[in-house]
Structure formats: structure tokens, C-alpha cells
Amino acid sequence: MSSNAAPLAEVTAADPRTDRYLRAALSLPVDVTPVWFMRQAGRSLPEFRAIREHASLVEITRDPALCAEVTLQPVRRLGVDAAILFADITTPFSGLGVDFEIRPSVGPVIERPIASQADVERLRPFEPREAVGPLLEAIRLIRAESPVPLIGFAGAPFTLACYLIDGGPSREFPKTRLFMHEQPAAWDSLMERLVDATVAYLSAQVVAGAQAVQVFDSWVGGLGPFDYRRSVMPWMRRLWEGIGRLGVPTTHFGVGTAGLLRLQAQAGGDVIGLDWRIALDEGRALVGDRPVQGNLDPALLLGPWEVVEATTRWILNLAAGRPGHVFNLGHGVLPETDADVLRRLVDLVHTHRFKGA
Ligand code: CP3
Image 1 (cartoon, rainbow, N blue to C red):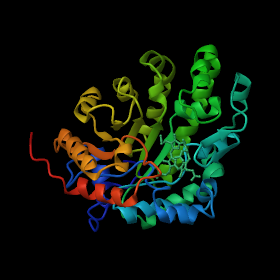
Image 2 (image 1 turned 90 degrees about the vertical axis):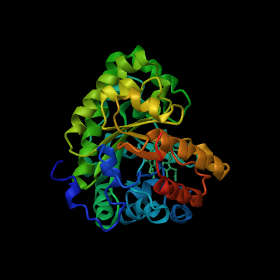
Image 3 (image 1 turned 120 degrees about the horizontal axis):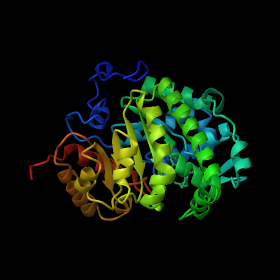
């Protein structure tokens, strides 16, 4: 652990939630399975919607007190075992000199998408203090108040490139997938810049107090293993070499990645994310028995509780009470989700007892 990470020994035992998440991420035994939810701070919480009425996402990330408040809302209401910094994967774009906006119910839209080597060369080197100073201040405020560990995060270079090249949300990101083959040299220089920026961004988050980091490669499941191995994996290895030195647990997340899990695990990450399209035990075997995070289908939370409960117990029984499982959804909380269902799910995960195979 680096001097800036929170060593486990320093974590107080006042709240039983304090170190479950960090312990599970390191494959250490835990009292009960830790649980948090991707996109837990957001539109499913009425208190978030109230703040969102008078402040945009970008404004929240530039106001340390407001950002800390929004980050801690799900910790208070849901009883989750970790907080995740409130920001977006596109938040560092302004520090690269990329203009963008986040459109409600749509997502990030880039003003001038990248189409050539010249566009790549116009990107500015990322200086965390200049680019995201208020966010780093928010991390300090959260650490002073949070009873649970704080996860910092960033988008992975491929997923960031999907927005930078396709210019906005898309199902398939066709321009990005063409760009990597048609302009391989420009692709490599874009990846190099994004890796360096991401290492600098995550390092600054850890120095400010983040106790773990997660890298979201949300759209990488759109690639086949050949493209992944050739155009993405070398850059992910380099990214993990950089953040592996930070001394905090790291999580490697993707969606639709059943066919890539083995390669993703080889690229790096202490914990590997599993969506809901693969059984937890099969996913765990594919990643060489490393700790895993997941893997409930977020859409189930909109349906009958009996199905949520049965599927959750099935996942927990596949985890078999062995160390190295962080319960989560396979992707983000859907905005229509009832916060009371999330709260009930946290209680279910915390009270479930593995009875043996
Ligand atoms: O608790 C949390 O996780 C909130 C912090 C957070 C946001 N975005 C805030 C947000 C996190 C961790 C993200 C990550 C993110 N953003 C990812 C990776 C995780 C994933 O879901 O795969 C991706 C791909 C994005 C890009 C993005 N941002 C999309 C596709 C959208 C639109 C869809 C949506 O959920 O609204 C956004 C907008 C966004 N990011 C909102 C929030 C709270 C909603 C917009 C708003 O309130 O103005």
C-alpha cells in the first residue's frame, strides 16, 4: 500500500461496513459479502433529483461540497459498503481540451469528434490539478465524512475513444472500430495519450484519498478477441502497470465481455467485473480465480422481488462463501429503479448465509 492509500490497519472498526469492500477486493475473508452499486448516486434517489433540479452534472463535479454530498447520499440511504466518486467518465475531457456536453437521458456528446492524427495531436497533456481541482477537493471532503471506502474511477482508453471518435452515445461505435484499423498510427497515439491521462487522473484521485480505483471499459464487449488483443490489450497492460503502483485495489469492468474475460484478466486488475450474461463460477474460473465483482442483471430490479431474491441467492451460492466476491449489478442502476428495492437488496446480500454446496 502506498502512503496515500488507507492501510487496512488504520480503518476503524466502528462501522462493520468500513473495510469489507477493500478486504474482498484483496481476496481476504469478510464477515458478510460487501455490496455497492454502479451508478448508485443518481436518478434513482429522490435526494439526488432534488439537487439535480438546480445543478447540472458538470456543475456538481465542480462544487466540492455538493459533489461530496451526492457521493454520500447512497451510502446513507442504501447502506452500501463503498462510495463511488460522483463524476462521469467524460469529466477529464475538458482537461484534454475536448469540448463536450452531457445531455439528459442521452449521455455525453462531443462537439468536434476526433477523425485524424491532427485531431489527436491537438489534445492537451492532462494536468489533474488544473483539470479537476474541485473533484480532488471533493475526495478530501468525502474521506473526512465517509464511513465506507471511497472508490475513484476513470473510463478505459477504448471506451473513452468511443465517445471521442463516434462523438456521442451509439450502440456499436462503428467509427471507433473503423478508426483503429484504417488509421492505426493515429489510434496508437490516441491510446498512448489516453493511457497517460488516465494514469495521471487516477494517481491524483489516490493521492487525494481514493482507497480503490475502478476502470470502466463499458463498451469493449463490442470488440472481438482479435481486435482486443491487437488494438486494446497492449494499452490496457500499460495502464495497469501505471495504476498497479498506486497501492490500492483496482477493478477492471466491462459489459458483454464473456468472450474477453481471460484477456482482460491478463491485461490487469485485482478484481474483474462480470456482467449478468455469465455464471459467476464460470467467470471466476476464466479469470484464474481472481476476485470478481457482479453479477445481477440491473433490469431485474424493476420486476418482482421474488425474482431479485432468487437470482441474488443463486449468485451468492455460486460465490460459495469464498473470499473474493464483491456483490454488484452487472451494469449501472437503471434510473427507474426504486431506491427501496436497492436498500432491500443490500440487506439481502448482508444477511444471506452460504449453506454449502
Ligand atoms: O454513482 C455513480 O456511479 C454516479 C457517478 C457516475 C456517472 N457516470 C454520473 C452520470 C459514474 C460512475 C459514471 C460512469 C459512466 N458514464 C460510464 C461507465 C459506467 C457505465 O454505466 O458503463 C459511462 C459509459 C458513462 C457515460 C454516460 N454518462 C452515459 C452513457 C450517460 C447517459 C445515461 C445516463 O445514465 O444518464 C451519462 C450521463 C450521466 N453520468 C448521468 C449521471 C448522474 C445522468 C445525467 C445527468 O444527471 O445530467
